[in-house]
Length: 316
Image (cartoon, rainbow, N blue to C red):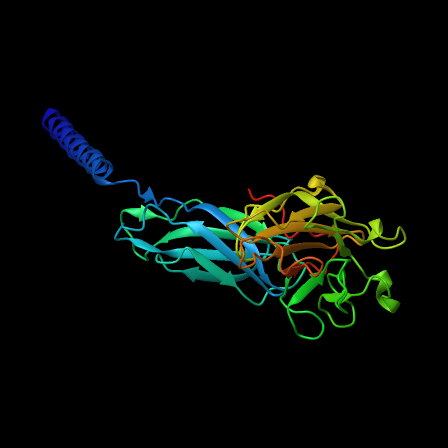
């Protein structure tokens, strides 16, 4: 029996040794795996993602390029378009050479969230996608001509010509701006938003002001205290002026004040519609065209036909 017991003990010891060796081997393998695995590095996100209303069905985006563009595993700038419910309604991509992109086939008045991610190429071993950056914006109409298809020119009230001093930002029939005579506006009197008054106190200056200042029953239009020096309406921003900044009812222009660019003014009508007015710079370097008493402003307009939508919400 003693011989049998000894054999059993040797067998058990042998089994324990084998198990011990196997466990040690597994532990060493695990350690080796941990020591060789690396965490992927996130690509750097874009900065200064901004937006502008490019048209009634389009929004433009601009951004500062990712500092990871020189990484070999850099893929593209992926853009998801989300509706107010957070549902992705469109997806597209921009290449690393791009710092601006126009999103098409949108719906006027809808405030979209545009989410941009810097993506790594498929099968990347060292890098992963960046964190997302977002901006919210809405399409709005671009209006470069009046109801008869010519430039939008609003003349001062002292003008002896037949040109009008009143401006309808968006006429419900023509779906364009319309310049009308404030002395005899006819059926358009209820649509006039602004008019250009000759300043009788300061020679050579004119005042673009709310139609309600000409006649109290006419529309009240307010300007934001914020304006921007820029030569076009493709002026991307993080957000439009805060709604609380729309406190002005008039803007004065001086024929002796030279400027380096055109200028955007933000307006809000008493019907709740927001717009941007680009007052274009004349060849003489001022914002006033022509000479007194036939001075005028040459305008382009971006207009939001859906009320109480100031183009966007604050980006986040």
